[in-house]
Amino acid sequence: MRQAYKFTRYLITLCLLASVSPCTVVFAEPSAKAGQLFSSLSPALFQIRLIENKSQEKSSIGSGFQISSDGMVATNYHVVSGLAQHPEKYHLEYQNQHGQKGKLRLLRVDVINDLAVLQLDGTPASQFFALATSTSTQGEKIYSLGNPHDMGMIVAPGVYNGLEKGSYTERVHFTGAVNAGMSGGPVVNKTGLVIGINVASARNSIGLLVPAQKLHDLIDHEALDHLSIPEQIDTQLHQQQTALFQQIMTAPWQSKTMGKMTIPHIDLPFIRCWGDSNNDELKPHYDISTTQCRLNGDIYLGRLFNTQGLKMRFRWLSDRNLGAMRFYTMLTNHSYSTSSANDATEFDTNTFTCQYGTVHNPSGGNSRVRLCSRAYKHYPQLYDTLFLATTLDRDHQAMISEFSISGVEQSTAQAFTQRFMEMIQWQ
Image 1 (spheres, rainbow, N blue to C red):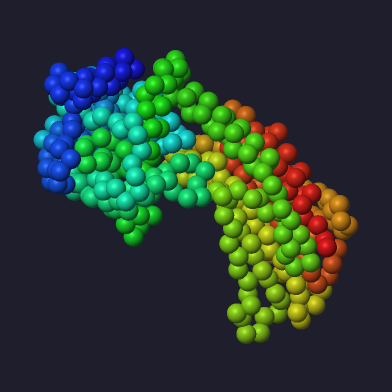
Image 2: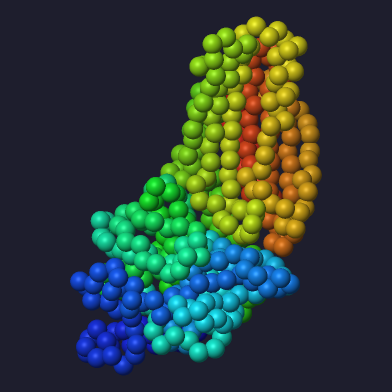
């Protein structure tokens, strides 16, 4: 596979230097309009279909594009995740612009960057896409191709706006339409070179793309050929969680005042926080203010199964006229409302097992603590962890602190828990 891709690069270089065409590499003229561009590129575009074996009907669809003369096809991982997670239930097929169908084999995945490389069985298209080796400039006109809502292949013009700000996973901000069904389709510049791969939409003509360099890296990663698809995913998840939490644990953890306590604020651009309160109520019986923080850039593994999640929530409550008993009852009710950052099913994870206890705060007072974890069934040594602590020692004031992290080793969860608890103190 890598040899065919390297040969493609070599032929592209010959075409550029010698002005000859020893291979059919798809390039459009710089002045080409969207329609001309689409016409020249469409033979190498495919609809990717996830077929359920028993019904023989489509379960989901996406887009893909041929990237080598021998029939390598690129798409998003989430387009083919059903096959990756349930190979006994699904198979893949493609359909080209003429309605012709064929089978696809899954070769490599990159779940971190939501990419997959497939092999087309049968006769490949005579044309294929070439990947850009340099980045675009902000404001440059680019073109997204794909099959939205199973309506047929289209080209959607837009603008390159650099990398998305504040995301742990690199994504290109594309000002243009990326609709359901276009996932995995290529986004090209005016010369027809692929600069990104459709991956998501934030609506209002805000699209997100995987940078083309990530696909370069996946194609060149020959070591993956010696691993099964589950082994590829497992290796990538472990490497990613190690790198992510090393960055989190070494980042500045600042103390932020909330009510009569201090809470941690992790100073990283990809962890974003929002606040709210009940100050707009006319006659509240108690005051409550909330801070919620979340990591931007989780990893899609399968339907209802996302990992690399981090959520933190802090709730400061202060009594006005409830009285001690009613305030305690209200506090108890609030203490049950916690959830995982990962809405996985029983196929993916075990059930949560929890430990309960009372912990003495470094600044004085005690907290009731619940710590829960569950193991991933298919990726050994990875867990989801839930933590919730409620202060106990004041009749009319309290703090509820919680976090949820997903896809981490137990040692990582323990280190995070210890540092989190140390930062929560009475003033």
